[in-house]
Amino acid sequence: MKTLYFTLIILLISTLVSGQTDTGNAGHFENRLLQNITIIKSDPGDAARIIDGPPVHPIQPHSGAPTEDLSHLNRLVFFIHGLGGEITSWERVANAMMYPSQQGVGFYARKCHTFRFGYAPSYSTMVGVAADMSNAIGAQANIYKSYQGYNPDPKNNFIIAHSQGGIVTRTIAHLEKDAGINNYGGYVTVASSLQGARILNNRASLLNFAEDACSKLAAGKLAESIPVTASAKVNTVLFGLSKKIINYSCSGLGTILPELFKEYTYQLTDDYKVGASHISDLNAATNHPELMQLHKIAFYGVEPPENILWRTFNWMIKPTNGELPWEANDDFYLLQSFVIPTRNDYQNYYQTNKDKYIFNYQKYMIYSWLPVLGISYYNKAMGYHTKMIQWGKGVTWFDNANEGWNSIIGALEKTTTTICECYCLHNGVYSYTYTPDCTDCAVSCPGYLLSSGPVTHITWTRKENDGIVLAESAKDLPGATFQPQKLNGIEILGQPPTGSSHFQIRNDEGLRKYLSKLLDEKLDPWFALQIQ
Image (cartoon, rainbow, N blue to C red):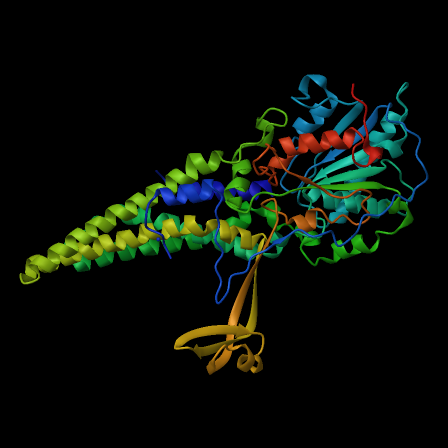
């Protein structure tokens, strides 16, 4: 999916060439983002909760025969990338595990050989990808069987897979379960949508999100290029033309985006939408004897919900492999270098045009008794008012984009229920009380019941996620032999952890810490690898 989001951020930036709007202090937006403050409002009551319960599929004990400790041998570790990735996606981590010169700070290279595989996104089914990856893994394992001095038991090899790669890996195991193929004995999924990716169910919303960004971010810039005149007719024509240009340009995204985002829209992704039959098939085979013998563990990341859009996009424009090993930790580069300055520019333009609008309107009020002069000031005031509104659209988009993204990835769900509103009078004070049923109003009302009737109650449910995949999906690995591990990013005493976002997780502090634990026998001991 990396190409999709990288393209989208370039698209948004390109619309900037150079407000429910809160048009107050421009610094308010910056403070709210950097201090991680989010307010979710609903009516008549507020409700927001973090969903991070136990996996639906509990941890299963390993059912295979006891395995001799062969960790002193050169085991093979296979890396599989996600959608939109390539053979270099795991480069930093694979090299750090194999070469002491590239191990980075706080990590030790291990006695293993690492291999990275690439695959195209154009397969029609997950089974097609898995079949080819199975053959590639088997070929590599067979080569090392014949090397004198190595002769590793293939059952001691394992796979580390990111994002869609986790579904590919589950499918490989599913295909091989009855074939007697034993080229690996376990796997680790990293930020994988094991129970489906909600964002794939919301493709239409993603395109709408991009079109909305285009129209609102371009509106102010284009309006600013139009001179305000004393003629209402000229102003109407010019601003009307700018609106048509924006509508024409941004509506074209509906045609352009699918072409740019081929990887995202390929048929392959249908196999791991939420509710996909392929996911159901994988889950149904969990207790197959061959699958139960595999050692399995899920790593997943969770980012703070505030600014999740910009935290995620941050590592779409900054390649994780462009950082030193385990150093992809700066969540705020994009936010501080682009988002906040750009939003504040929009706010400043909004305020400048508002000031001009007020100035000319006041002049109109003063000279309204002089028709020609008064109308001239009025027309100018309306022109600046139009510009103010157009810049305000961009301010509004920046202020609401994060929550829009949360909805697209399924991290912010809206639940609507009907309850009863009881209108009461007690000691001369009017008040409202809410009950599940209107028949309860007479009891719940503290005084006299004046009226009652059904109203809509909205509850927002916020779910933990890494910016792309929900935690509830990424940690729910059926048949896992060890509990899922949440990667917290950088942890400093007395401060909340920074978290790990979907792309960042392939080369950040959180992965270093938990991969070390895994290889140091602190999790499922089967994955232990000796230090070189």
